[in-house]
Length: 137
Image (cartoon, rainbow, N blue to C red; front, side):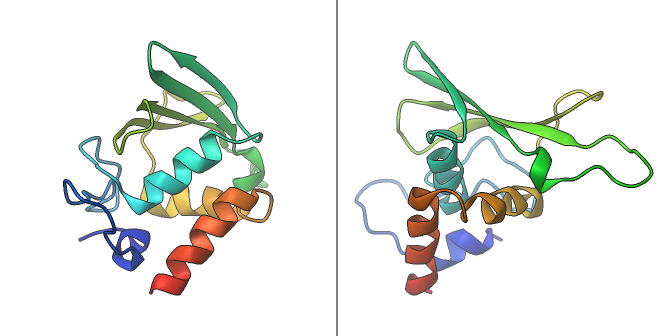
């Protein structure tokens, strides 16, 4: 099983085949060129994120509170998405959602899609990539 974005994408490069980051719905660190993670890295590399680059590693924090508004009962909600990857290669080995009380959690695909769907209205690079995938389907 693969995520919906990997299902749409056509392999147009030489080298290893893609490995989806969400083969069973939850995040898998052993991904390679997952279409969803390419979109996440585009978002994490843009002005909506706070990024740090150290020894060829990228660390980026994307605010996601607007994507997950506080429930009326006041339950905890997600505040940020932390993305970690090496150089600009195909593996994203860290993806975590942070909230205001619990330890970081690895998100499910549907939660990541909610973030991408929110930001595609605000981020032209992300919007162009998602539109390209939609045309490929």
